[in-house]
Image (cartoon, rainbow, N blue to C red; front, side, top):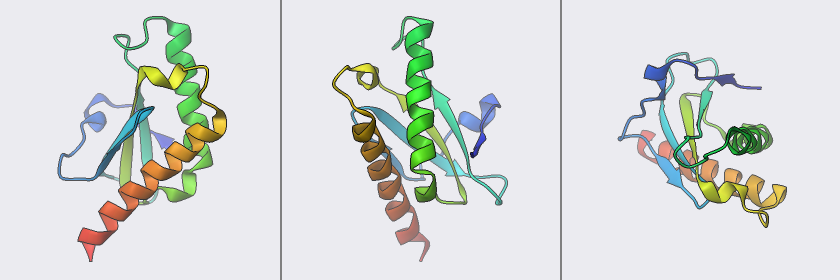
Amino acid sequence: MRNTIKNHNDFITDRNFPFSAGELFTVRTRPTRDTSDPRYGLVVSKRNFRFAVSRNRAKRLLRDWIRFADEYMCPDLDYVFFAHPRILDANITRDMGRGEMVRALNEIKHRYEIPKK
């Protein structure tokens, strides 16, 4: 399991680094401070998810999808995931969420590695 971001200042992302926006979540990145292992943070706001049960379920889904797509993360980036309310729709399956996570992380990896060369 990857390290998690716990400090508020570490949630501030850099606009110059790649991001990916989908219908279930948005991923923003920033350069990691510790080069050994990337970290991730989850933003599930009370504005979008009124009840704590909903916020907890959204976080649980995101963590599951992140664990599944762990190998697609760049080692020198930190990731911040912003949950969208659609994540809790009944017709969203586990495989659909995992596929969306892989797509988003591949997109970020592709955008990040091309300018570096």
